[in-house]
Each structure stands twice: as C-alpha cells, then as structure tokens.
Image (tube, rainbow, N blue to C red; front, side, top):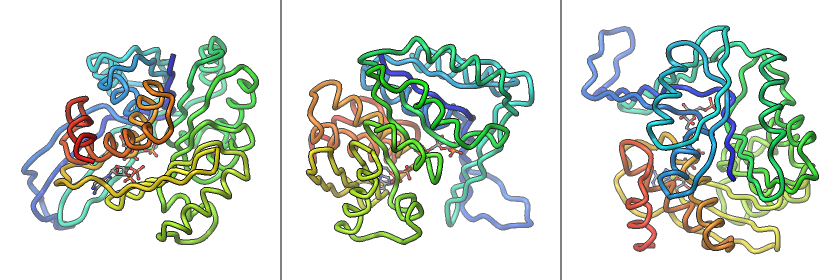
Length: 300
Ligand SMILES: Nc1ncnc2c1ncn2[C@@H]1O[C@H](COP(=O)(O)OP(=O)(O)O)[C@@H](O)[C@H]1O
Ligand SMILES: O=P(O)(O)OC[C@H]1O[C@](O)(COP(=O)(O)O)[C@@H](O)[C@@H]1O
C-alpha cells in the first residue's frame, strides 16, 4: 500500500484577477477552492491513476473538516489525525500579471499529535511506500522527517521524500527510494543556482552520494531529469500545452512516477509518466485526470 503524509494540509484558494493592484480593491474574475498540501495532492493523483493509497496527516478546525470531506470525495482512503489547536491553513494562490502565493502556518502540533502519527506508521511494512511531502508546521522539531525514517528503517518500506533544505538533506542517509527537488531546491541545497542539464545531473549525483537512490529533478516548463540508482540519466522536455494552473504539478509528477513504477517496475517508464502527470496538472484547472495524463503520454 502507498501511504502519504501531509503534516500541514490546506485548502488551496485559487483567485484570478486580470491585473493585481496592491492597495486597491481588486475584483476576481475566477476563484476555486480545493484540498491541497503535497501528500494530499500525491494521493489524489494516484487515485485518479487507479492506484489505491491512504492519506495521513493532521487536520484542524472547519477547514480541516472540509479537507477531509474533499479528499474522501476524491476517492482516497484517509486516516487524518484531528488537532484541537487552530485550523488547517488556507493557501492563497493569486494569478494576475505574475503568480504569487501566500502559504499559511497551519495549526500548532505537539508531541502527543506526533505520537499518534507514529502509532499509525508503525503498521507499515515490507512492500509499502511512504511518501513524506511538504513543509512541517514550525511548532514541530525540524528533524521530524528524519525521526520517521530512523524509526521505520529496516522494515522494507520504500520512502519518497519531497521537501526542501535540511528536512530533505537529513533523510538522505536512510536511502529514500525517490526524492524530487525542483531545480531551485536542488541548487539551494548546495548554495548554487543550477540550470544546465549536466550540472543538474552532477548535483543529483551528489545527493546520491549522500544516500538518495533515485533523484527526480523537476524544472517546471523546462521538463525534468531523472538520475537512477544504476547511474542512468534520463531527460525530458515538458510536453507542449497551455498552462492553466501549475499548483500541484510537482506533486502530480511524484504520483505519476509512482503509478508508472508500480505498474511496470521500470524507472524510465515511471519518469515519462511523472512528466506527463506533472504537465497534465499544469494544463488543467485542477489536478490531472487519468485521461489527461494518458493523452499527454501518447503525444510524448
Ligand atoms: N509551465 C509548464 N509547462 C509544462 N509543464 C510544466 C509546467 N510547469 C510544470 N510542469 C510539469 O510539472 C513538472 C513539475 O513542475 P515543477 O514546477 O518543476 O514542480 P514543483 O511544483 O515541485 O516546483 C515539470 O517537470 C513539468 O513536467
Ligand atoms: O507544504 P508547503 O511547502 O507549504 O506547500 C503547500 C502547497 O504546495 C502544494 O501542495 C502544491 O505543491 P507543488 O506545486 O510543489 O506540487 C499546494 O497544494 C500547497 O498549497
């Protein structure tokens, strides 16, 4: 079974204005609200692609109830832990002359909440995948991803981590099956700016030296690169299309990769499916459907 954990789920509030004027009353021409947070997005796209999974994480307040309802409506199994302090965040995605985001802080989580999560994770075993994705609320220790991998190592679970900075770097020694930084996050890990494909493959290799097995680097409209554990490097341009809403494109890529890998056991096929799923979500208002992913895949 695939389990995803979203420490800080949210409602993504997409609002589009023709031109955003700071300090003025702006009127939107389009708005939409849907559940988000990286693990949740992975869960929804996996489900869309026909892969059963369980979404874990923490929810709070009325926004938390809506997240639970909407993720359930998307067909995912959920096993969220309800938290009493505060409310799940509403992340604002403002589409105007430029795109801006305000991601909230989320509820305050404590040691007891973490203990409940560990209890749920203790049932995982051989053959399971665990996806840890997204930021953690600042009330939690910064080594929480590392603590989870340390606790679960040696049980035959394959870990997938989509996180930034130390949250990602510190888990590498536990040999995650897949990590997916974007090229900015990859550069940030080494204090450099990377754009060139060879350079990206080089830094992906450095993450492997630190312990990562397969490194998938996304580059938004410039496509993606995969460096596999056997040393192969695959590159793909992004499929052509009109970008409508790229929120969740990275998460969709992780889901596409996992679905492709589970269906074929082949890393190159998984990579192609990841690219197709990422772009299919970028080309649609919400997260990609199976039909949208397969349409792009057929044209790649
Ligand atoms: N503007 C775009 N045009 C086409 N495909 C895109 C675009 N933005 C994202 N994608 C697809 O989604 C994948 C992940 O996007 P990216 O923005 O790099 O991830 P993240 O959201 O994690 O930063 C890309 O590798 C690409 O396949
Ligand atoms: O946990 P973080 O880093 O604040 O990110 C949360 C945001 O990222 C998203 O999961 C989208 O992520 P991607 O665009 O990277 O796929 C949104 O749904 C959510 O608002």
